Image 1 (cartoon, rainbow, N blue to C red):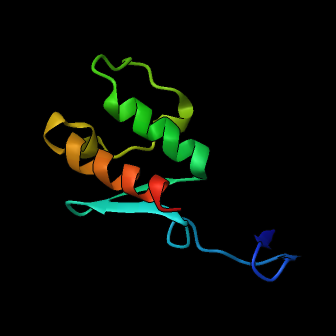
Image 2 (image 1 turned 180 degrees about the vertical axis):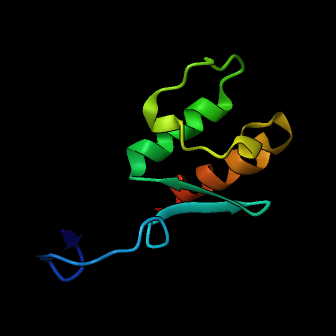
Amino acid sequence: MVWCKACKTFEAKTISWPEDAYWQWTVKGHKLVARNRDHAEQILGFLQESQRAPNRKPALRGIPTPLLTRRLQDEVSSKVEYALANA
């Protein structure tokens, strides 16, 4: 089911996941997708932790491994922060 706030419709639609995801970012050829705003905030919090837990929550297991490196942390975090601030 898809809800459109603009036209106030709630109807069944076929979507292609993750291509149709609203919350998605591509960094260095790797796609990061969040289910919703809360999930995006969870991802951002996890990426910004200095000591990350080795056994991640199931919601955080889909983050591509290259995006978890400290080398890409700033780029990924800034993209997610920008999206959260401008949504």
